[in-house]
Length: 181
Image 1 (cartoon, rainbow, N blue to C red):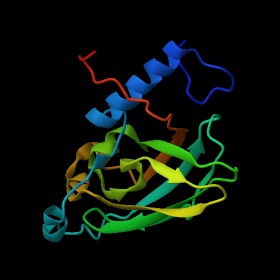
Image 2: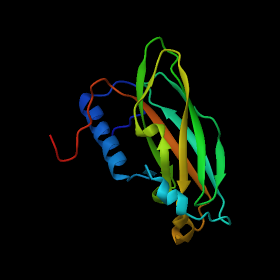
Image 3: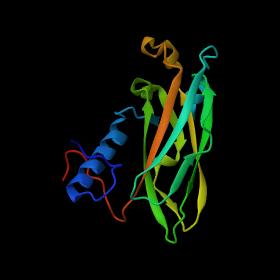
């Protein structure tokens, strides 16, 4: 059985190294149902909304057992049409007496819809530092590519879930680059 990063208990250094490599791989390649990240305003300005195709986007939030944060979406769902931007917010709180840095991973379900889910700005692009007892709003600015409406595989998809999991970032920890030692 593979490494389960959400499992309770201690993990070996090798398991954490394997998980961190996987985290890097999925973020770098966009595989695993990951959304496409960091699109510029030029595409947004020229895209045409597909008004007759309404999609419900739901939001999920999880925290790895090693991170002592409270993390949740501020809305359970939004309705969007392909080609139209949307803004959603998550809330994170550090209830401890020490500063903690977190890093998040994300995925999109159904898997095939991930290639059409585009994030313009997201807290997941960078590590997040929360000071003791600090609570912050974390925005996600996104759109679903208008090509979604033309893909026959998406014909019956009217629900997309955007899910995040936060992990504690270790000071000075570097993720290995594939093919480099």
